[in-house]
Length: 307
Image (cartoon, rainbow, N blue to C red):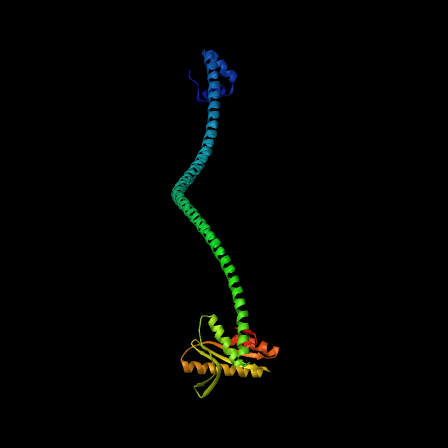
């Protein structure tokens, strides 16, 4: 006899909701072991489900971690790309540095070559300087020897000059004595004394001249000359006394005019002009010394004469 649909519904609801009823039915049907197995199976399934859920959670966690890891990998890849770019830049810089280093080495080699050449040139210069120094020392030694020779010669010359000065001094004293004798023998006429002085003075210089006294030169009128030697041309003016500088200037003017006349008449160049004065004041004598020195006139004052 079959069950009505309502009965089937109540039965199935009881199986679902009433565990004791469900167990009794299973026992009656001989499926209590199946129920136990089903329970175990349910427990296993639940365990598997839990494991699956845990795996899903772990998977989700791993997926999340993988996402983060992928992000990090992307970041790392970007960093790696940047590192490669920087590495390439570094390699380019290293390449540039290597090229610069090569250029520096080439320049350094050039500098060393130049330094070597300079060192060799310096050594040559030092050798040349050494040779020049040795040659210069030899020249200084020769120069010192020459200086010693010159000093010895100068010493001999000084000694010779001292002897000549002594001879000249003796000669001057003799000349003055001779002139005084001439003056006295001519009766005191100062023109003859001056002519005698000029004669002896020229003789000491190697000239033998007959000095004329009181000569009239016929050129540009008439010029009276107290004493004259024609070869060499020497013109002399003599006066016994001068009292002032004005008189001294007049005597000098007269002498210079006579010199010009004598040069014009003879066509010769003057060898010497002589102004002789017997007596005069000291201030006039000093003036005459300075004036005749300026004009290149030989001044004879009494027994004294200056050039």
